[in-house]
Image (cartoon, rainbow, N blue to C red):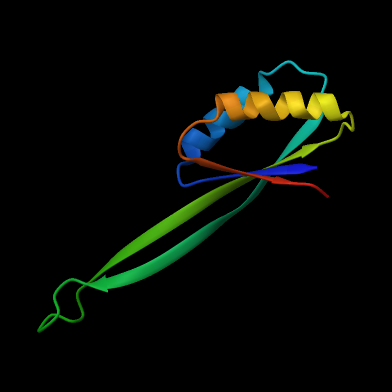
Length: 98
């Protein structure tokens, strides 16, 4: 079982991950830092004469993967409920059953 977290804000994601480490449960888990996905694009500043003048933008998506190592169903449900209760706006959560 794995849970992936995504956010545009790195500080917010790190804050949430530290919050998860402070939870005292019987669940053993491991957090993996996944690579950052970057999207870049350029926009013309003026449409007519100064077409070489462009403005560049970049969007970074930060990812973390949490892998649960226990197999007790009740403990997993309790852990999911704590994640759901402590979830911060701006973080996307996706549960994967492997």
